[in-house]
Length: 324
Image 1 (cartoon, rainbow, N blue to C red):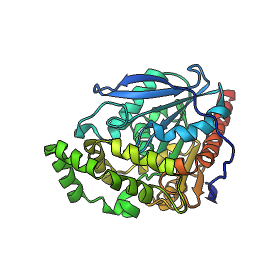
Image 2 (cartoon, rainbow, N blue to C red; image 1 turned 120 degrees about the vertical axis):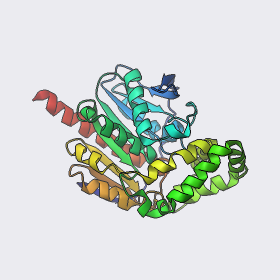
Image 3 (spheres, helix red, strand yellow; image 1 turned 135 degrees about the vertical axis):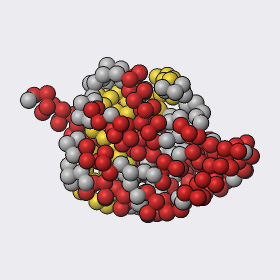
């Protein structure tokens, strides 16, 4: 395990150019739910990097990070991000289909449609990383062939309910919430909307770390949280309780992996990431000092540097395989 502990958030006085307008498309999941996809960079690039966002967020959460990455990669790398079902511009989904396994299948549908060939690096934040692990569990043949690298940011592979705010995820409580949403979704949605200010406070306290947070990024996180329906928000909670991708990690020992977390992450505390990294001897572990669960918004330059290193390692490993 390559250990890069306690990395201070990067000072970034350089003005980062805005991303070009993405190519937008809709991919139809296997059960008919439309998935909103964004693409940056040439379709014929040598490598595709796919970003998977977290719970109650959407593809916009990656914009600041991709502003740092796109100029570095130029024409060599295509960037794909998309909204999970029930999030952002993607279609609504039933409660029963809001599972990590279904997100793994949705990722497969996106890859089959917009990146049917060539090497891929998956970068997941929080629930997005869990979805990437679910995809690899369901399709282990993709590891090392299609998927040549994986980034696991602010996430857990198992035991989510044992640490941090995850300790408040209890089966009876979640079942009551899901039952209320199932029987009175409009009433529950109105209640959530009336708590809009509270969502902003939750985004600041739970998602961001110590020290002053960029108000624009806090506002973005709060807006994404507010925009996500109560049906989607509640439906995925059961999957978090049951999360166990321990066996999937055993499949990743020969693939370059980045494990990154903020030291002040309350939702997925650093112990979860350390546990993942200790099971992967060739993983790079990065802990960003003072950052919270929204580390990709708090320190996009620092996270981008770690992602670039991951992609470089994936390219190098692939070049060795091709040469042998």
